[in-house]
Image 1 (spheres, rainbow, N blue to C red):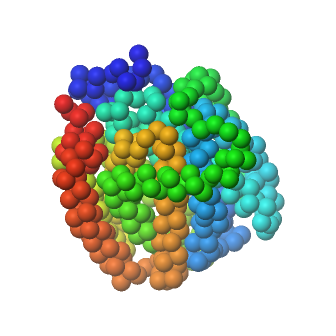
Image 2: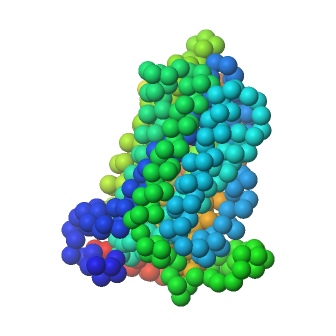
Image 3: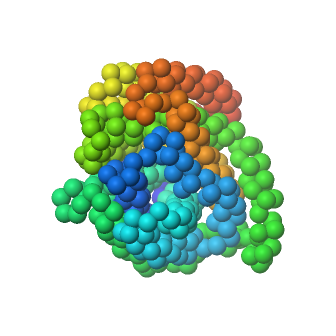
Length: 455
């Protein structure tokens, strides 16, 4: 049975409805296994810099590290969408993971040697760039394995399981470092190398689970011509994707709200990293803080898990735009209540609330892009969204690096961030709410797919 023949209104339990679809379960398994590898690799890479007693980075160095790893891909991200709309997405899923498995091994060797060389960072750029390509391909492929009216639940399940798997990878790496290996270049290198096995497994499962054209793009929508011609047309294709997105006002407003959230989130992320590593850690030894920050990742994972259960029913009942406005405002209140005391236990509550909001906004935004945008533009739109996702985070981290002390403890900065979230909620409620009520056919509005799923 194809995804289009499923009658969602006959399914009272939406999670059960999407999980009954074998193609969706296989797509999720590809994502879950790969994102465990992401957690292992990126956790080892960050740990070798942040929590290694052999070197210690300040706030600006941490922000620069994120910029080096995210910005180069972000500059070419919109161009990737053109290829997502040309190439079989099954091939993208498999080849990207095989390439990552091969590239992680030399990076692990460089970490093992503790060499201060630009080569491992350049290779890491490629690995993380391929990861964004891989995730954008999965998002563009999701409408091919689930019914349109169940996209919100499918995104909720896939996104949350992926995020939890990423956190699981980080937690597993931290456990290995603390119990079996050592907090040293050698220990982090072995954890990074382990990620290659997960990337390879994900590639093999993706290759074996789907037919060549099963994940799209559809043959009638696939762009033809030579690769060189595609490169020449890339800029025009990106502009076309931006124009297509601009015409879908509900999705555009959601992307703007998500970008604002990520900008402020960048400040909060840097503050948390500095607080857990230095602010709550007395003395010069930062090795013990690696386990503490793993607890923060666990709290964040729980927030994402709750968002996956809460977002679909609440969004269907009150409208996705209202839910986004609520979680934006709730994040501001949560940061004031749990962050200002600067207590390591209470701060986990702020992490929990922030990640719940992040996942809730992402579910509604992804569903809006998938539902509103035509399939021939979908890859480009997701790449544009991914670029904004990264750029706003890095910009926020640089704002944090310029305004936060080395300990991360600043009541003034947290108050400004909290106020920013509340203002963003008010602004989005005005813009997104007016548009949803006007057209009645937006994913966030009364007549959109979130509502049609209940009819």
